[in-house]
Image (cartoon, rainbow, N blue to C red; front, side):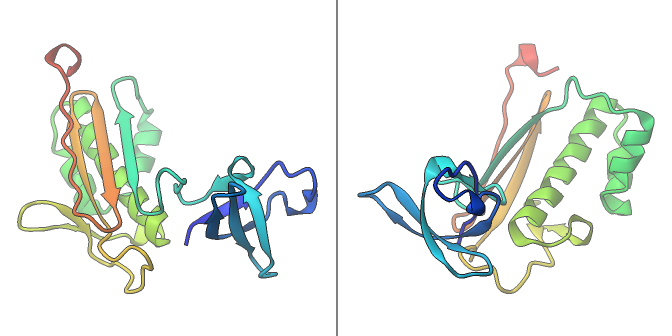
Length: 188
């Protein structure tokens, strides 16, 4: 079920800031049925008064992710860089540092951070506990996946990088892949 937060209600301002789960959509009234956390009250809310949590939107259901990061103009300080390296495992940090060129290190680190963030956001695991391994075909996967992930029976993700861009795509049911390609004139 998709988690939402209510905002901008004039008729029932006490609900603003409250969270709940979408349980239905009424096409005739164009309102979502939301069960409120705690009270179990069911309310009908327009899309404009809902903020989707955990990256889900009506257009991008929970578990579907499409992220692209431009690393070209990202220049972290030495302190920021070391802090971010601490967010990945020591093995991953060592692999990032093996790259000679800083832009390659940036792509490698952003790729690993995106993977951890995606796994954490979708499953609820703390990013520091996420364990990512690779298949024989080198596709990343969440090794310590929670057993129960309702609606995410085959949640999987993939990453790619090219030139200045690093991308991640994820899907809850279908096998997912991503392949970034930058034209030569912007790839450096």
